[in-house]
Length: 465
Ligand SMILES: *[C@@H]1O[C@H](CO)[C@@H](O)[C@H](O)[C@H]1NC(C)=O
Ligand SMILES: *[C@@H]1O[C@H](CO)[C@@H](O)[C@H](O)[C@H]1NC(C)=O
Ligand SMILES: *[C@@H]1O[C@H](CO)[C@@H](O)[C@H](O)[C@H]1NC(C)=O
Ligand SMILES: *[C@@H]1O[C@H](CO)[C@@H](O)[C@H](O)[C@H]1NC(C)=O
Image (tube, rainbow, N blue to C red; front, side, top):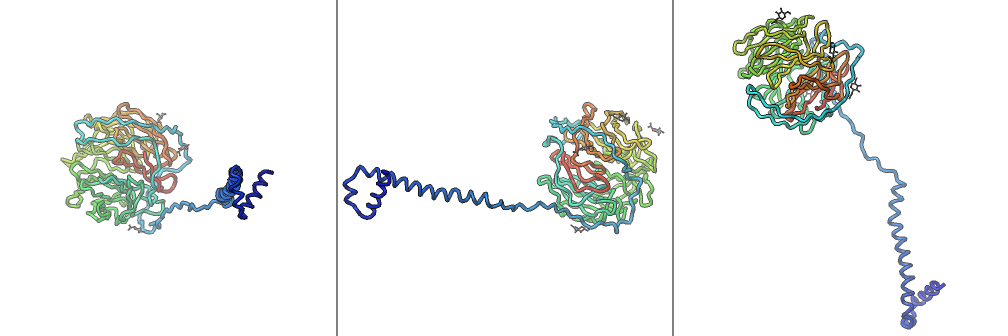
């Protein structure tokens, strides 16, 4: 009632009755109140429009889906099937029967890493441990799927992978580099030849020698220059070979032993590459012809060759190469015959061999240690899994990591050997099962696992421990 009256009076005021305005001071407040009310209502309406309008448009308009689908651009270059003159020997491939894999618990263990005091025989380089092994993680995929490739840690920390096969149809000439800081693979110059079952050796000048393998020319060898990213041919080996070994000696030369020649004959010959001349020279023959054997450069500079096979005979014998005389001498027999095993030089100078194929085609879980001072072998702890075509890497903390391989099926399990206790413990499962893959200990201490096979074909994937 009253407000209506005030409102009508206000209209009168607006019509120009100023005298009335001066006479009724008391009513000023009464007038101000409705003015405020009207203003408030107007303000409220404006606010209402501004505040609620966007809210309405938000709810009525569907959210813009601007997120582009992630495309995994995996380049798969044409296969090189027409260019490969040789056939992979079927006998060298594992029988892919029904896979019966003993499952291991996936314990990702955090290993605090005590610094291993180098023995007096070790080169005096202080190792700073930068990596704690927290378990497995995936990293960038290689540009090419690869099995039977090589992986080498360059002095600049990058990892060079070369050649290998994508599947049963071809062999790569391509090479690529893994960058630790980005976890990404970049292609680098192609080799002059396609290669698989070859070897790669990092020379003391920083270049990488690759030689042999199944290729157009099994005798051929070439050098990668990390500063230019290019390959140049170097002297040919005297014997063409694949499934051989290559070891960089303390004098800088590269010793190549055994393997299979172009006529599928297993070789006992050995030869030396001299980086200063780029040429090869014969050296003493091994006592046994061998393929699928392993070679380890001992801390005293001699080379221990273990196991392998000729035709279907697996060897338990081992022999030593003396670079000062260029001759081989028989040393103690391993307790087990082994081929496609691993051999790792521990920081205490002993050599740990693991797994492999033993007598009667059994897949070994046993491991043993070679003592260079006595020339004898002693058994040490068994792995939880038998395995061959696996990898073994000596970590910066002195422990040995074995990964994957084949035991009536391809394995994803990994295990860790502690030289101080002689005991194996699980190191978790890789994201992928793998055999005939490669493992590289990076300068930061992590282990890079590359490629291999999870079925018939090679894999692009890589992971870090
Ligand atoms: C390497 O060779 C392949 C063919 O085998 C070719 O497609 C590719 O472009 C070459 N890469 C480089 C870096 O030359
Ligand atoms: C190794 O074993 C072979 C039999 O396979 C035997 O003839 C040889 O004497 C053994 N060598 C040593 C050093 O024990
Ligand atoms: C290792 O292999 C042997 C012989 O095949 C077997 O008796 C043993 O149970 C296996 N496992 C371990 C962990 O020793
Ligand atoms: C590893 O292999 C086992 C046995 O085949 C399987 O049960 C498990 O899921 C695999 N783990 C991973 C991480 O793939």
